[in-house]
Length: 501
Image 1 (cartoon, rainbow, N blue to C red):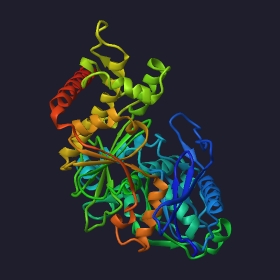
Image 2 (image 1 turned 90 degrees about the vertical axis):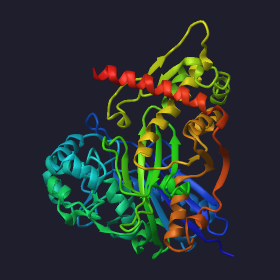
Image 3 (image 1 turned 180 degrees about the vertical axis):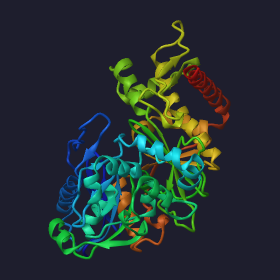
Image 4 (image 1 turned 90 degrees about the horizontal axis):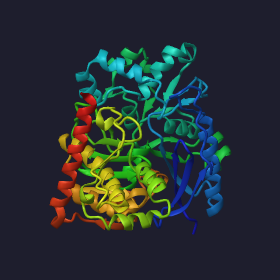
């Protein structure tokens, strides 16, 4: 019997990953990414970051060829395609659907001034209550930069796309986007439930540049004969799902309902929670976007907290204080210190300005060291506790928006490999942590299965999601964790107040 597959792409700034999911077993049959070394990012000026969209297409084709070769899969064996992608990028195409310039990607900061000006002119009340965010440095502001600085390019734009929209267009020949995608670009008006005309007017953008809107789950387009010839896919194969990488990571962890949280803790850390009502942080310390299961009639928002100083602090401690130890050995050493690190407190914000701190750049602090009783076990533990407490600090903002956090789902990777880190997070927040073996491209493949009706719902799609660990809060030690967290918050407040005075 011929095996049937779902195909998922994950378009990152470092590489494009492709995965095949066997429909019968629900398991990943093959995965590959290209290039194997990090893809180039062009930085013509300080703060700029661009990539050639055609590079994503070529990398996707190479990754796909690898996994089809590994499985002897034919194009006709693939039932549907899903796409995950780096968020907040801008791709401008002409009427022939060719890129007019390199994509201005997520980490490019040139458009900040345009977003700030729009926030001032449109007003905080409109931006936060309708857009749920400041226009900031998101896709709409990047397009305003192109209009102001590259008018000849701007005049030739037929449609604007996000990176995932571009890959879908190369497969289907049709430019389109999703409400979730429009919201991450800060184009979507959540009160009016349509593209924000005041924002377009402020930036001088015609509504005609916005591509056709398709559902996040559903038949968004089909592989053309030309794309089939280039990729080995079968003509007519449906593209049935797409989402930005953080919403897709949440889907990959089956995080879809209000109060559920998806977390990652690599170099930087992300806490992504689902909110069941339209709300926003009045200080714009977290981003709020349409989640993958948002519809104009069903409110499901993704509230995104990003903390820059997470795993990079842990790796700094490793390089400078414990180069003789492996990370598991560091974790074991840290566990020898008591909860609260016997008074040592570390503020982990040493990797640039933090949005959760209203874009202040505070730097990292290590406080409370006593030369007579503290050693590196206390410092290593205090670093991990400081990272956890920064997550908790952001999650308090989420709770203030009405989010009842009971469960945190995370991939079994990076900081979550530390038993101390995950136990501290569970015990300080009071939430149960479920750790899974998961992957963004696999999640995109399963999203495509939902979009084309192979799976009736997310529970069926992720029935085979492998749960590796469950971490429950230590109720008997709650007061110790709360005391340590309270001391950490006091140290942070003092630092912020001193910086402002």
